[in-house]
Every structure is written in C-alpha cells, then in structure tokens.
Length: 202
Image (tube, rainbow, N blue to C red; front, side, top):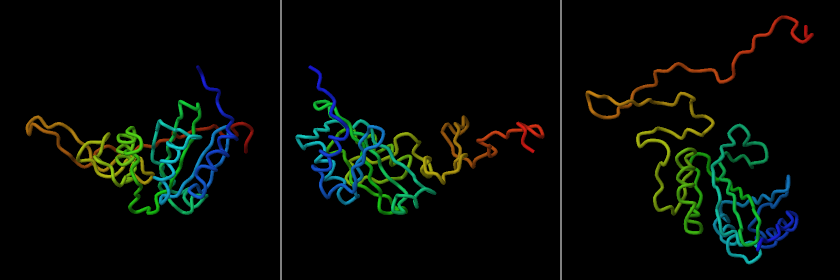
C-alpha cells in the first residue's frame, strides 16, 4: 500500500515545529525543503529527524562536502565548508535536505552521523578525503578514493588542476613511486576565435 506524498509546505511546517530552535532555518524552494542547522545542534537535530514520529527519516541517502570558497561571503556567515545531507522517509514518503557549516575554515570539523545512520560511514570518508572535513567520533576516518600517499584534498577550490605529485609503477624498484608533476597546465575553457565584426558587433 503506497503512502501519499505530503505537501512540501506541510513538511516545512512539521520540521520547523519538531526542530524548534535547533534549526537556523527551514526553507521551501522548487518544491523541496531545506533545513539549515548549526554545527552545535547538528547531531541532536539529525537524531530528531530520524526519530520524531512526524519525520521518520530512516535513510541517509547522500552526504557530501561543499567548498563555498569565494562565495563564502554571500549568505554563508563567512564560512567556507559545509556538509549537505539528503534524508528519506520511506514510511511517510517524504524527503528533506540538511545543510550545516563547519565553524573553522582551517580545520573543518563536524560530529559523525555514523551512529545514527550506518550509511554515513563511507559518505563521511569521501567528504574527508575530497574536502578535508573531519568527522569527530567516526570509527575509521581515512581516505577512500585517493591513494595512501595523496597530498591535499582534490575537491577544494584551491587545489591545483594538475595536483601536487604524480605516481607510476617502477619495474626496477618493483613498486609505485611518486614524482613531481610533469604534465603542463591545461586550459579548461577553450579559446573561441571569432571573425572581426562577428554577429554585427563592432
């Protein structure tokens, strides 16, 4: 038996009521509800979203890091790194997005969600690997996509396109070795060559 999907505006009101002052904002845009919480209230708010009878978000569908970099001065209270999670309630047929900002740009830290949703384990490892966000209380926080000797966090906006080192297998040494980057910098946006007076512009 299928459950009829709740109206987004009703879900917005419900979540605002359940979270109370633990939510910084509960907004509705393009038919989707987004909750923003502070780092201090993150764990408690997520526990409520899972356990409250009106919410029952039993599944953490996705969790990813975000680097606002140059955009951090526009609507982010000057903070650079955030984590965005997508929650699903199968029982109540509803979804919500949750955003939380790390309070320290130099050492971004948040509580782990792995004790609330087991699926957070690898998702948080990915956010740690690619963005350098540390999840306090995580049982096994180590890189998951890059190799063990990788330097830096490649999804940060200030990470160089060519990286810091390159690796190859050396047959003589019988192992993988790391060397300085030898490829030349590339242009991402191709040059567009136009004729004079193209499109009637002078």
